[in-house]
Image (cartoon, rainbow, N blue to C red; front, side, top):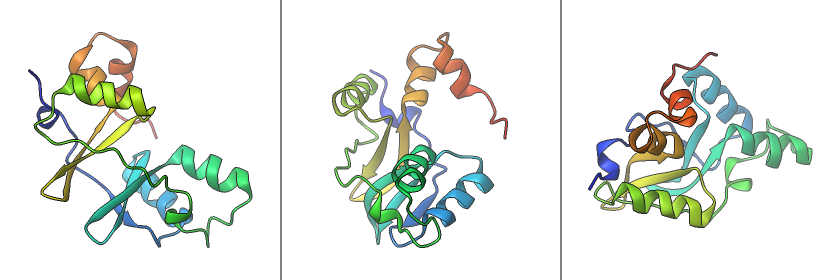
Length: 138
């Protein structure tokens, strides 16, 4: 059995729910990533992606400089443990139509597993795995 902990990402960027969409977009640009984990203290309250900023923020005419991440973050966060089976994590992603799952241990965020991570681990010859394993081009 392959566990989530064997291939989760541990280099995470977290931001407070009171941070703005602009601040998140700038962080994503500077870190060459497509998502930030939104927290309230030590608790994970959601994940905001570059697509969320575009669709839930800009497309809805929200001001990126004043709109807070907590205003566009989905509140139903599905999480996994580093000891969970990778297949179970993939099933959760499919069931809840999410592409990323925070990895929680003793109430703390310790990692993130994405659909791309699963593809690289489970189907290394797939197109998604190939794209996910490649260096960012931005």
